[in-house]
Length: 243
Image 1 (cartoon, one colour):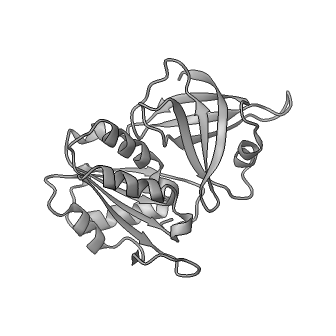
Image 2 (spheres, helix red, strand yellow):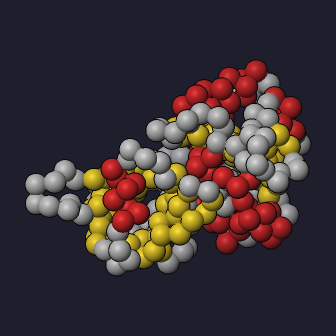
């Protein structure tokens, strides 16, 4: 797998306890929306263990920089080191990897189902969709604990506004300290039936924690979604509350 020299451009906040890190896009680096990369940070000392982590790319292929997103939680040496890097710090990108891309769907309508930072590959897909003025219908069902902890919420509203064939279903599982007035609770059969309604042979992509992905796949099977039209990406190391 190719190793690409890169550097940190900047780190910003995209929700409570969630950051987006932007990297220099190496010359000649190409990828498909939804693919992943390994980010390899420089060792602090000559005998220090190399720090690396796999992330789905948030950025779309047409963009001039690469972007990933992650929750900031105690106990992760990689994430701690990432937040402490100075702008311009050298690092490496390995990849791209993966087949979690719209090309798997053979032109069918797309239904994206995400929990929390599982939104990452779908941001890449949606940005690419809008950039190319694609006519393919897309439905996104997105669950978080609270609106304040939902990455890229404002951008998703803007993407929906700019593309009439993109429709959002948003739900929050938490109740405290939130100004959210929309749907609440875990993603249920009714939400999925509504999202799939009116689409001809849609392909479903599911991304989130292992528990969330397992539950959603069971729900999709229960409402009659063919097994071979469901693809999934598991995000390890996060609590499972659909966000």
